[in-house]
Amino acid sequence: MEFDKIMIPIGGHGVCESTVKVACGIGRKSVTIIHVVYVIQLKRGLSLDAEVDYEIRKAEEVLGQARDVAAKEKCEIETGIIQAREAGPAIVDEATDIEVDLILMGMEYERPFGIFSLGDVMPYILRKAPCPVLIIREAPPQGSS
Image 1 (cartoon, rainbow, N blue to C red):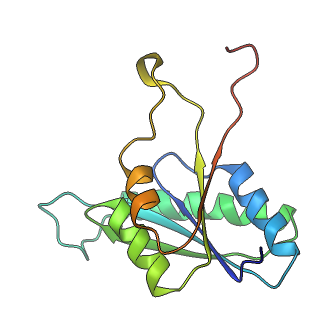
Image 2: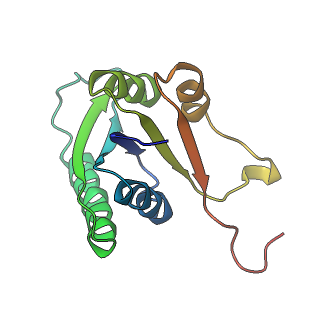
């Protein structure tokens, strides 16, 4: 399969380096546009265009890390920040609006309380995405079982 547009949504956990690397690898096989979007979830009491300086600085830092990883891979990416109430619907809306061919999501290796969980955002995206979704989970730390 060839993908003309790939979207990588990232959030509060930071950039998953392996996800950007995989997107760049896929992009080398064809002319691919890679969109990396950071979603800032706003509390209900704030307007959607609220100035949330701390969150914007954090988003810019994480997007900068994604650009650094892409540059090491000799790959160009486009970045953007989305402010929304819920990350899942915002990601699906953005994927629909820019007509992406693939959503590539990174997942940290963690088991809260010893239980595997996809959280709330990934299941929503898997149900509602207008295109294929590929999830890349980080490898477990050395020595963990």
